[in-house]
Length: 145
Image (tube, rainbow, N blue to C red; front, side, top):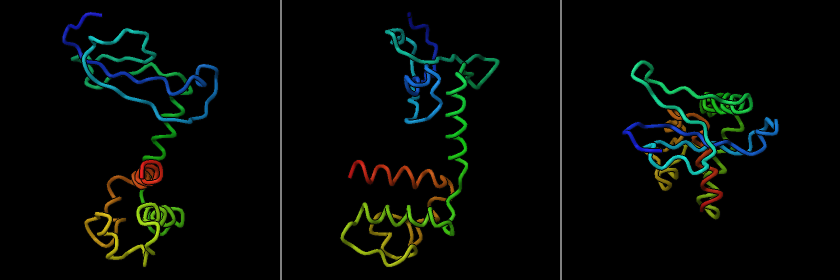
């Protein structure tokens, strides 16, 4: 494929299971952007090229991909709520992953500054990014200590 200065967005298939009708989501998709010059080596993807008419690229997604994307969107829409026990537990788990031997004195505590939060209540930093941002931090803290 020759490079004509066009850009693209490519979304890799989420998993081989989707091709067989499996609609469960086990991993997230990989999104890449860049020049079209290196595409074409059997890369399994859905590609979309933007046009001057439509500023947003469109994708041809399978029903399973659409379902997975909708599930992700639903998770993104969940705001962090400090009154929900699951959200409180995730915050405690984040502390325990970062400081396994130091006891957390409260969900609102000066201790959070030790982790790098701006203030004593880390929930204020989740307002814009929602609960999924805490889930992502917890994932990285547990899997990449």
